[in-house]
Image 1 (tube, helix red, strand yellow):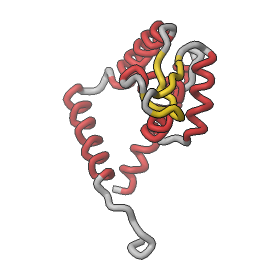
Image 2 (cartoon, rainbow, N blue to C red; image 1 turned 135 degrees about the horizontal axis):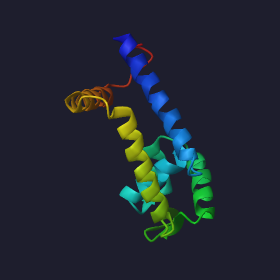
Image 3 (spheres, rainbow, N blue to C red; image 1 turned 30 degrees about the horizontal axis):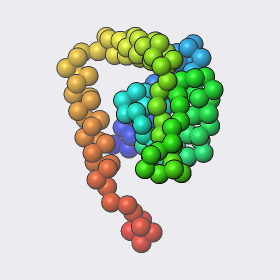
Image 4 (tube, rainbow, N blue to C red; image 1 turned 120 degrees about the vertical axis):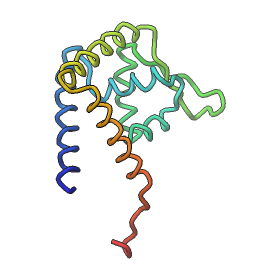
Length: 146
């Protein structure tokens, strides 16, 4: 079983690196793409909430947002319920890039999963979901129980 966790991690690493190379062709990093995709699916998120969802430090997200804002892809708006907070939205100029990124992601998926049996892909997705569920249900370990 220990080898399975290693294999999953190595596969995820390979996927990330390959996707980084493809996204780089469009002049964007995977981190920037992740921000854009999350804002496309859920506009108006606060910076601090998005950083938490992405599992990155708020200052790291701030730097990513700064670059996306400079490129006129993302805009910050004051949160009407909290003047100290910023909500994030895609700019109109992000739409063409989002379409290109979707095509890139679709082509990438077709290339790496296209020769696999669709039933096995669905079974793998279910197994990975079960693994994530097991992980999320794990109780934190304390020093006494380690």
